[in-house]
Length: 164
Image 1 (tube, rainbow, N blue to C red):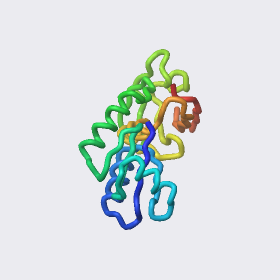
Image 2 (image 1 turned 90 degrees about the vertical axis):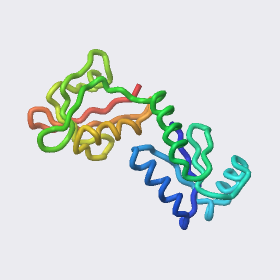
Image 3 (image 1 turned 60 degrees about the horizontal axis):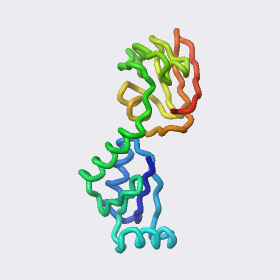
């Protein structure tokens, strides 16, 4: 999913829109139109106006912080691009996401994950529970490199693979 956001530093709705995207683990590229004249021209060409924020999700333009429209576009995009590891997870006893089962032929199996592993980090970001793991995986697209750190039998392991 390709997400761009055109902002200015003093725009309150811009800050809200960025926080909204970050809370959902959606990676985005920000363009400060108060400093970047080329980005400002691009935004005006897209929308015909100078108001911010302008958010572009896979080519669909949203003017202003329109939460329902953003949620709709993000769910449509995540359904198309969702990475599935093929594992069942739950919260680990201390911290992390506990792998309960690994499906045959899935990314999890190809990465070497096994039942009982505890995922502690994905792409350098901490995994404190199953929800963290789901949120981080939601921001990964097909073709991205995924690095997963996990514990197996109390020993740290690392798997690196390309999302498919």
